[in-house]
Length: 164
Length: 435
Image (cartoon, rainbow over all chains, first blue to last red; front, side, top):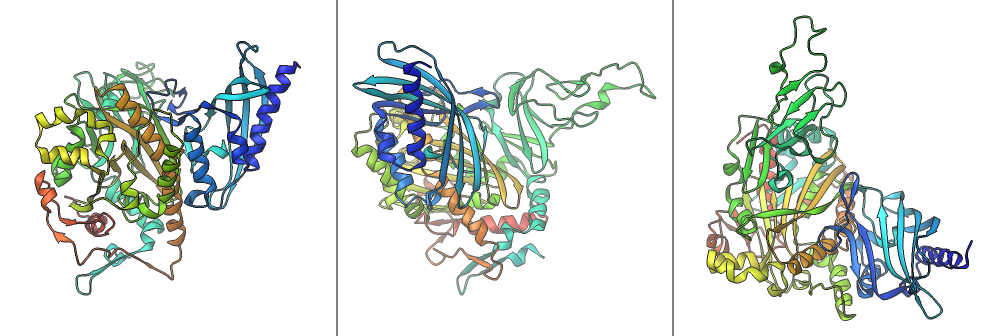
């Protein structure tokens, strides 16, 4: 395993762990200020959205303030659906580098599965895959873009960013 | 149990209460499917979702699977979604294009008019031969198109769609008239399951009273995003309606339909505002004010809501069980709007209207808690009395401006009188009355 691959895998594992430990500020610090956080919607049962600007997405956030707003909602204790906040456990696996470290940008993909335990909804398992654009900034890599594919096209209950 | 016993109302003392068993009782639910969803008009889809010949859209009317299809003459038909031979569903997807629908079980084929056009091994085996013309698909008895919104009715003996929509029409027009080219459903959708009765969704979507409690956190999150200098190209959200600092109102429209509205604190941030000059050339100032300066949630009995708030939404619901409902949401937008306006509309849609957004999950949690509470049969009655002594019969000044002859008007959107006609209509339909 290359050194770069280890570095990418460590970052992905760290991100998942920070979400599960609800260390929201540390999680947000992994992202670049101009980050893109995208969860496409399913156009049909087997066709995934591909034009985030002009289609309805499940989530499409450009820039850290949008992510900070989402974190504010789930961590405020004021959001009906997230009070009490669901507990999560992410499994991230099958990490692959899709590009070399060119111009300080690395593409990578991984599979994910999350177990959420929620007072109202009970136990829920969701899963899919991630595609990352990582950017080297000084010492480490930061997340410049994350695409999350959620395999459910009919969603049982609600979904928030700590559950995917 | 008589449906009428499930509603308690009197004018003096002012009283309007609903038995919570209407949300939980399996017999009530079965009767709703039969008397309401399989006997009266229900919303099916928007015409832009079946644009070209052979485009189909599959859905349900009550428990009955149906599909809507664009026919060879450009008309829109709807059929029971079951092969005439053994009943297999004919559409492989919720939406698709098929000028010939081929049953994947035994290969029988149908055209877009529902005619059976091919039977595998037709010449052999049938005792008296087989006449294909006797094997056409069963049409949905009535299909109606109100300005692009397609409705169906499984019962032929029903009033015309326009009469059923009644005074809701001028409010639907406020959406349809936003572009001279009409409306279109934007690609991308969301389907989700709620653990609540379909009426919980119907009521939540026009409940102005919850906004300042359930969605206060949405307002805070938006405030945070804007304070941090959101660089997503979004324009500020209308926080006024969440804080309750704008004029509001609600209408009991008649035929079970109802609506809430709230003034827009900053109408210039609405995606439609770019069309103001054009709209003023086509319509009266009063009507344009309704389009641009008041956000509206319109409920059309029994299964669709048309929201025109920070974004524009079609929300369709399908009852699955007393405590399960499938919701499909679509963004509907004026054709020909600018890319900037379309993007703002979409991002606001994702913020608020999606089950992956920052408001709808909280709506679901609230209505699902009501569903749980409804099982507390020793505490039997839900109270819907707010506004009973201040409401006015008939249309108020604003409704008259667009000739909406509504049943009653209230000058706050957090009053509850808009539900009264809806429940009376529901009860009448349950008792077998059909208009």
